[in-house]
Image 1 (cartoon, one colour):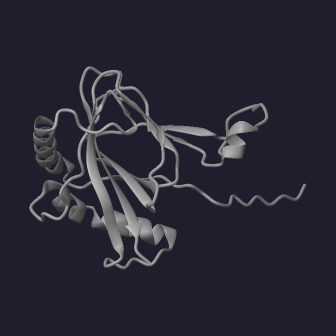
Image 2 (cartoon, one colour):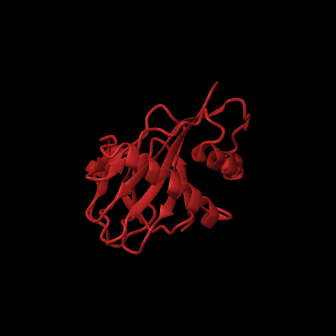
Image 3 (cartoon, one colour):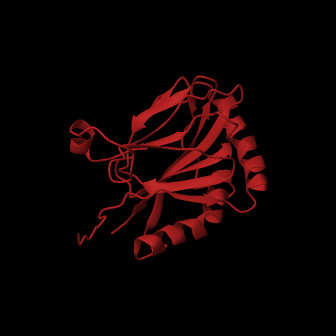
Length: 200
């Protein structure tokens, strides 16, 4: 039979291995642990029993978060090119950057990042079995009403688990529901997240 298949409306997750991530991680880890020492309570958002830092001070050009964000510009530019978006540095804004420390048993519930175009997760510490990054289809109807599957395919996928390593950078649309599976390792999982919005 004659057949055409059009796969419209993709929801991408871009994965990069950041260059010189070892040196970045050394500086970032020191900064994050200092924040944790100053504010042991942190914030309570999607994190369950993990530590969520306050926002990094990106107004300070000596801040490790600011310096890291500058180093990530080539990756953001590549995402814009992949989307076919106009990249105007004057209009591409970071609305917040923060860190999360998940100890054994800690996880992050499903959530989105409202009022942003792109969100990201960067892995400073990612030991084996520290918890997959999980994304779920944003189409609520397909999540509630779906037929039984003979076999999993990209056309019937509702959930995807994504394994990560230190130095990995994930960039994805902010509307994409995502969560973090429980850390089953005895070591900390340390992630930096941030949001990007495009000022029109």
